[in-house]
Length: 372
Image 1 (tube, rainbow, N blue to C red):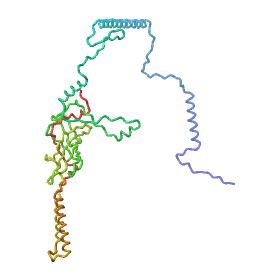
Image 2 (image 1 turned 90 degrees about the vertical axis):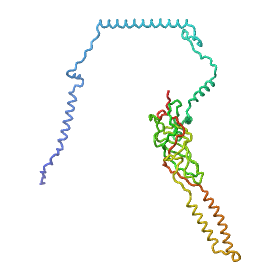
Image 3 (image 1 turned 30 degrees about the vertical axis):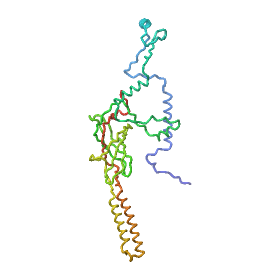
Image 4 (image 1 turned 180 degrees about the vertical axis):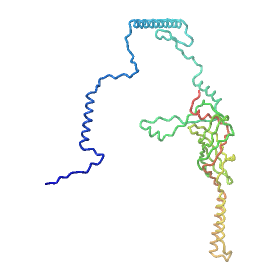
């Protein structure tokens, strides 16, 4: 007889029997089917309480007659207005046709009505003479500041627009001749800082940047903003005792591209003295060192040599070397003594630009804007 095995271990709490889950799912499906079958999809929605539905009624016979009378009155009013406009137009055409033409006007027929076309009067002067007179009159009020700007750029060819836009420079802002200008009087100072290093050995370009805004006399209009570039030229050293570098400025370019030509304005140092000084090398050390070295060489060449009949061949050779060395040292010393000093102006040096003539400048906000 095979013994039977009974499982007396209770199921762990929280576990659902295997068949009970299936029965529950079948019951939920049956409830859903019954809800779909007994539902009434065609029922009209019940209006919310307190909301009244307006009733639409057809117009009565008296209302239709009233609407018809109103339409007839509007039509009669429109016909009277059209008739009045036609009478006024006919009277105007008759008055124009009967009036004699004015001098310089010729009759022109247009839709049956007489019209007149004005012809310009014959001028005794040519267009060239008129333009010449206009330029002569405008020159009486011309400013002493020369304004320049490049010509309009040529449009790029198809397919090359991207390449040209990446390499072509931005055109400068075009100044307007009829913009109001304000006077920056002679003696004014423009504070700038040097952005490139200068050497007194050669003439070189100078690039300065304005560090302080320059306003009009009433301090209401900004004439030269910070960041404006002022271009000039430095003069090379011409004298052995020179210790300052002369600088002149000839052009000013503002951040928005507005350009002004300057009349060779002078550059001053921070104390207001003409020209600029920074590092000066007069070459004194190298000159004295070369002189002492040549003297020592010449002295050693003739030391211990005999003279007259007691001189040997070696003594004659050493004396010849000493004489040649003396001649060479004289030429070298002359060259050393004639050397010009080396003047170096480092970048960042503060430079004041002295306005030597009244400048007429527009407000920064009026750059490129035409004032009527």
